[in-house]
Structures are given as C-alpha cells and as structure tokens.
Length: 488
Length: 126
Figure 1 (cartoon, rainbow over the protein chains, first blue to last red):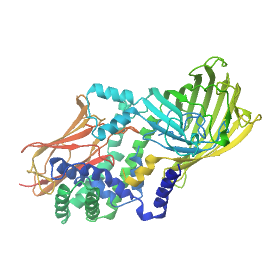
Figure 2 (figure 1 turned 180 degrees about the vertical axis):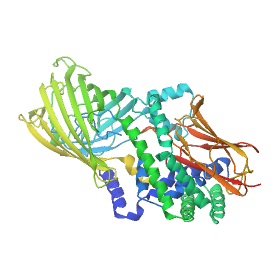
Figure 3 (figure 1 turned 180 degrees about the horizontal axis):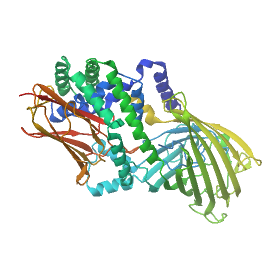
Figure 4 (figure 1 turned 90 degrees about the vertical axis):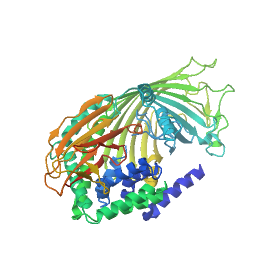
C-alpha cells in the first residue's frame, strides 16, 4: 500500500511540478491518428490509407491554432461511474449505492468509519465481462466476430458487472496482497432495465432528429462542415502545401511503428500547414464551431444518460477476521462466522432539474444458519438518495451534493452471533436509521476529488447514543490519470 | 476522375461526380458541407441499404471552365457508449464515382476526435 501511494504521489508530483510535461491539447487531439498510423505496417496499403485520412482532415490542422475551445473538444471526446466500495465496505463514504457502473478497473481508496468502529482501507475493483471480451479482442486473443449471435452475446454481457473489494487491514502489515483473506466483498450487478446506452435502438429517432437539426443551413453541423471546407481549401491551395504534403506522405508511409517518430512527423505537418492559412482567425472559427457542435450533441448524450435504470445487485460479504489488528479486536464465539449475501434492487431516475433520485431496497441473508441464529434472514433495508450537480468550480469539473437516507431493520445480530468489538456489542438486532450529507469537490481535471460527508445515525455498534460523524476521503480515477499521461 | 499525387482529384470540365456515404454498424450522422463553387445537383435522404447500413447519395457537376477547383467536406460522427469501445467493423465508407474512370472508395474508421472530417478537392483540368 505504501509503494502504491508513493507511485501515485510521484505521478501527481510530476504532473504538477513540471508544466512542460503536461500533455498539450493538440497532442491529445493528434494521438488517435498517430495510433491509427502506428497500428499499420510501413509501406502497406493500410498505412497509405491511414496517412491519407490524416492528411485529408482539416480539423487536425485547425487544432494546431490551439485555442481554448480545444480543451472542451478534448473533454467532449471522452465519454459515469461510481468509484468506491459498496455501502457495506469499511471506510466507505457512499451510503446508498448508485446504479452507474465504472468503465475500466477503477481503484478507490477511502479511509474512515461509517457505521463500524473497525478502521480499514478498502480497494475496490470493478469490471465488465463485455469490456474484458473487447480487451481480449484488442489484444488479438479473441477474433472479432460481427455476426448477430456475437453482438447479442456482447449486448447481454454488457448488462453484468463484477466487483471485488479488498480490505488491507486484514493483513497484519496492512500491505495489499489480493489474497482471499483480504477479500471483504464480492459483488455482481445486473441491469434489469437500462436504456442509457446511446447506441440503443430506442434512441435512433433522437439521433435522427439531432442530425436533421444540426445539418440545416446555419446550424452548428452545417457551419462546421462549411468552415472546415473553407479552412482546408485555404491551406491546401497554398504554394508550398503540395511539397509539404508529399513529404509528409512519403515519411509517414515509410515510418516505422515507433510512436515518437510518427508523432514528430504529424506534429510538424499540422503546425506547418496551419501557417499557410491566410487569416489567423479561420482556424479559431473552426474550433469554435466544433465546440458548438459538440455542445449541442452533449445535450442529447446528457438526456440519454439520465434515463431510468433498474439494477439488481448481489453482494457477498465476508465477516471480519478474528485476528484483525489490535485496533479492531473482535471477541466472538468459537463458531465460524457465516458469510452474508445481500440482494439489492436499485432504481435511478431524474428528480428535479439536473438532480437524480436513487431508491434502494435490500435483504441480507446469511449463507448458513448457526444453531443459535434465528434463521437465515439478517435484515432488510430501504434507502433513498438525491444527487445534485454543483456549478463548475473555476471553469473545471462539476462537484456534487448528495443527501442520503437509510432505514435498516436488523432482525438478528449483524454477524449472526453475539459479538463484541473493543468490549462493546457489535451490531445487535434492532432498527437503525442513517442520514448523510456529502459534497464532492473535484481537483480540476486531475482525476482526483475530495469527498466530505456528515452522517447522523441513530446508533453505532460502539456507542449507545446518537452519533454525528464526519468523513473525508480521497478518490482516484485512474481512467482520467492514464488518459492525461498517455494522451488517449 | 482520377487521384492526383497531391491528394486532390482531377475531373474534366462538366464531369458529373456521384458521392455516396454509407454508415456501417453505426447510426447515420454524416453531414455534407456546401460545395465551394456550385450547388449540389441531387441530394437523396439517408436510406437503409442493408443490415446496419444507411446511405446518402449526392451528385454535383464540375465547373465547365478550366482550370478551376471544387471542394466539399464531410463530417461523420460515431455514437459512443460510455465504457464500451466502438465495435470492430464500425465505419463510414465514402464512394466517389465520376463520369470517367473507376470509382474510388474511402473507408473512414472511428478515429477520434469526433466528428471525423474528410475533405475532397477536385481540380478541373481539360
């Protein structure tokens, strides 16, 4: 865990301390074309096609004028996730599960106590079988198939997500090993109803309307196409352009698949071509209209992203280990504590304005009932959450304000048998109510954010009276971090 | 019509050029620019031409005077699903067919940033 933190800290320090090391917007714009060329062998028809496509894109040359609109264009070309343990994981600041699902392996590290006094550090991994399949395809391990049966299988697999949560405090040295001992929780999520896929057939009419709207004369799409055309003619008809293009074509066609070599040639080409444009404002007009088109499109994406979702979750929770660190000693009966299965339904839909509402209901069932227990059912819960999007902070990302409430009817001891933690009864049966207010502040575009929360609970396992507690956490979105450093 | 070393197309004065853009395995989100000089002679609305294929066809006539230049740009967008890579085989295919010469096909895969733009310049030469 220390090594991991040091690695993350070094990446952050490198990004913050050396501005010239930050990947420019232009580099991020050009990178996919560079990858497209580098993915082909030199002096092949595929290479020639890829190079020709790049040379025929006036938008890339316009990007070399490097305006503020480029930042939005870059952001809009990146396309919701809950990064954090489930509500039951130790140290979680998320009280009620959302129905959203992360893109890549997301690593969340949070520190703090919610309903228990056992301190721990959790790391959560979530993945999607369809995403794994696509990754295998990208790596050439699985041949891409486009038949209807394969597409249907992929569509079905996209409904599932699997997560694993490890608690490093289960090892005496706190080091993350990924062992079964450290496995605190395994979960799977299934979409019962989800139309948030912009490619879903349901939205075809919406996209048709979008296209018709933006392609009418004077609309952003038409204006962008016309501006690109005029801009392209402006530099492609310059006296020196033909020799520039022929040189770039020859060099790129024969270049090795080395990223640095191709990057240098492509960057030189777009920057030189941009200088051929008669008017300096033409390129800026293109990027301005480009950003305008993407803003129109974002409205459609945002509307689709807020359609209702119904999700079923199954979570397997393993009980605390009996020889945990001294700050979390547990005195339990000699019998092995049973694993707990939680079945949860989550419904998400828009609330008022840009806010979202989440409703959950769940039931906890012990996998096996010990003789002293009252059957297998441990508890049932109902909860609700309201998420409000905060205004942009300093022109950067939006923060989020969340209000959550949860009612739990604990029909028997939380661990299945009477247990004590630090001399206090742990999770005796009864009724529990929680309320939480949480605000998340993004730290610019770095991928870091800081959640602050306040929780009011009718009881905790260690204190008999009502308790108010605050938590602070730090969330890393590796997707954003990797995107910044690799310019994808 | 034929391809020149500078990436432009050579057309004869008054040559009729047909342009077709087909969306394959993606929703049709292609937008044509206006022509630089003339107007489009023919514009067909996007039509389904097969499973997961939608096509729009246009036609223009090259200027009668030479030397001259004509041009248009296509912007083509791909709908993205958050967290899901664009499936293989998703692309636009642009086909150019002049009165003279063989048709030219230009595949356009989903290479960000979106929308993808492709410009075509035609040099009118006798």
